[in-house]
Image (cartoon, rainbow, N blue to C red; front, side, top):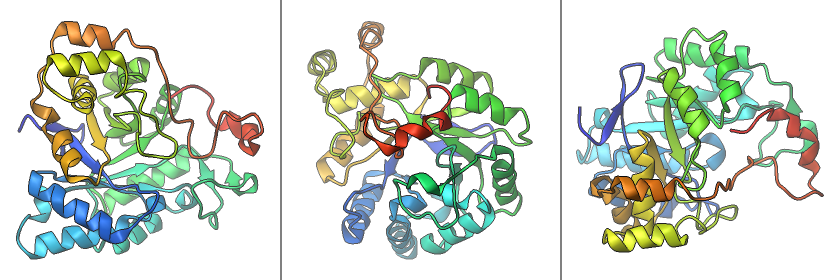
Length: 315
């Protein structure tokens, strides 16, 4: 197995660096252009979701690359996610995603959030009356059906806490292959990584740089003096240091940039070497979580405070 891949508990191999395709502007041409650039640089893992609105752009760009014989479908790893409004019927949700992508199968299908929404809910930030009680056992049964039908090669979860993982494992016939969560040097997920490791669930990091450039993100990670100092000493960039830290924990990282220079910079983080002193310095950084979910915020006036109980412990 290549050193830029990880073997999941189901036997499927996944590239350690993936390109996230969420974009607030959701400009199809920009997304497709970024994917073509990324393919030339060696990216083979592409991460999308129904709620991102980028599935058609991802599918079209990859279809063009396959048609032009620049890449084989078997060499690609495509991830998408089950939105809360499709928890009632994950098979239909995945079939729609495959139509959006113009693909016959996904390599990985994730439960996007441990949250069920009414079938007509369509927005990333739902209204209070759009939530339903989570029936995780039923949702996971549908995910397992997706796997049985050959619509995907592996299934997993996203934004699941340690407690949610334990709850799922109480009834799951198929252990999730992946838990994709926020993880970076200032939100290190030590407890969750331990729990997932005990059950051979791979942890994949989104916002591995702290989400700079996103409306909800921050530059606090890459601007931190410790990260800056290590980068200077290693003749690297702060983003490369942050990514190398995540990779050193055995995690994959989902980077998000459509800029050619940053795309290349992120990809070569695989080659960066850090030493024990560097890692010790990073492990002393304060903990700082940027995401509470698309549905929650820290504003005391937020209408979503009343659904805080949907998350019964920290991710």
